[in-house]
Image (cartoon, rainbow, N blue to C red; front, side):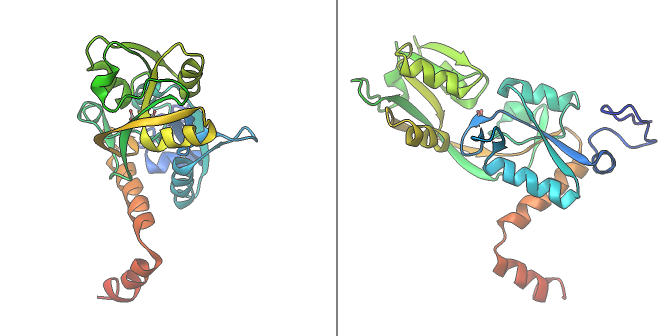
Length: 246
Ligand code: GLN
């Protein structure tokens, strides 16, 4: 017997987070941490928007259900997925070996590297990770930025749940740098010209959508939506007129 963890209804053999349950519930519930522009952030109307959110909307639309977004700390996303509080993690999450031991990932949908952000008016302009030795660095708890900085010797790390707090710390000169994903660093630097990117570290990361381990039905669905999004209108025409009529 499967029991809907949200409404308590028993669904015979249908389990939480399956396609059938999501359709029955009428909404797809995703978890994200919205201080990660342009992937997910809170706009002036207090709505969570961004690149990832548009992908999630597309998945919900293809399922014919509403989209519900849960705002969670980044390091709570995997536990939330594992305990059926959310159906998917759509949070610019890098596919890593460690994470893939406990959750499944979709096909990669974005390439990323880490960037070091410093104050524009300061004289500390690191060019590589090692230049952070002996310095104070802010990161987001549990991110790949946290991981790379944690490997530096004699570095003092302050871990925040929100990137907005990490940048406040940099602005208030309580840390020397913030390390985070390059595209997001670009977005912060564009909004706050008092910060600059002093170096990009080639970490070769790829983002994936997190799915509960073993939920292959939902994983296959997410992968099919993503691969269709990667296709150009031309690719879709070729498929329509040649490949599918073979
Ligand atoms: N890509 C990074 C990671 O997976 C950061 C993601 C985020 O902070 N939303 O750890």
